[in-house]
Image (tube, rainbow, N blue to C red; front, side, top):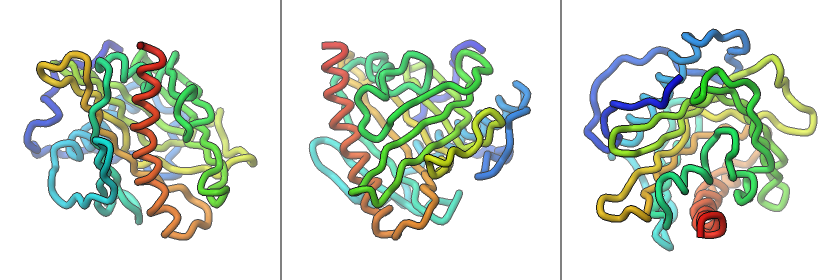
Length: 244
């Protein structure tokens, strides 16, 4: 599949549309054909655009060093949708190379919340099934997790690149006894060019994760804002390390 183009600018105002059902925890797409996978992933990408455009209901929970993290209740599961916003020194392509959920990503080399990333099955150049593993966190109160997702990459006319992901099951990747299986509800990022600043990127991220297991809500509520702020700080260092 070619890179997506010709879609509206993600910062444009909300536009009404009817979406097909999006993945839910336990949805099985192992035998999904290309047409079905494309339909499901496009629905996730449209939800991401809705999150990007909708300015209402967000409450800032962490702010500093040029990064803002906010949240609002999720409509996908009994948890929160988190949004991160910050400027990263680096071109959109450089930033994308560090965060992209594709072959050749540098993510596992710098992101302290990612142990490994693997492609389970590639349907096209921009549509795939992936598995991500994460280490223990919060003094091991959060044990290692793994996540299996359907991922779509989109590009836009203004140069924005986005990742759009949501949880699925895949027959070649059953639950692993060494990990608690977590579930990503529609999530991803937008790497957006800054007008007049070719060597800077506006990075907007959305996390909407059910960590599963028996975790105190206070642990979950404190973990995400802190880890997202750390994500931006470490990403800035990674772009400088890999691209100078």
